[in-house]
Image (tube, rainbow, N blue to C red; front, side, top):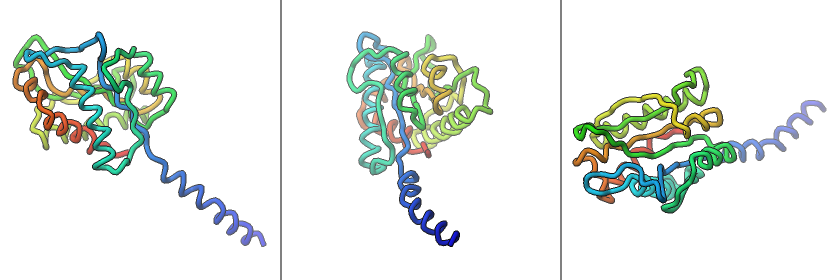
Length: 209
């Protein structure tokens, strides 16, 4: 009799377990800067805020068309709007995503500086599960960008950026610097839509949640 009741209970719970297993992972894409905050400006006059928004939007499209809506994806901004850093991180604390990824472009006084770098929060130890997962994803994205698109890897680094500091306790979180707008070659690369799409795919595809 007890075994019969257990079998009935298992059969009753199975659909619920399957439903939980099928829930989509959530990703927040933070397109850096926006509105009156242009971010870096290239020698060719392109603005960081426009590049980051274009890449973020392309990631949304590829999630639908290439990954068949594998993830539930949200953006911290969908238009050329200035959103405060605290509001961006608050969205992460409310939605509790499986990944928060902030998209940026780099700039340096040395116009010969090139490459991609990914940042983790400086003061979170690797024993923190979110930091460990952040590091894994950061390495995967760097590998994809260097092997598929030929970018120079500047490695995984750490910084005390607000978007990292205020989200890492909630979820894995990384900040990606996708090339230098101060370098004429990398700035010109980012002017072309096909290259924006290539970057978006190279950031999205190695994310395995």
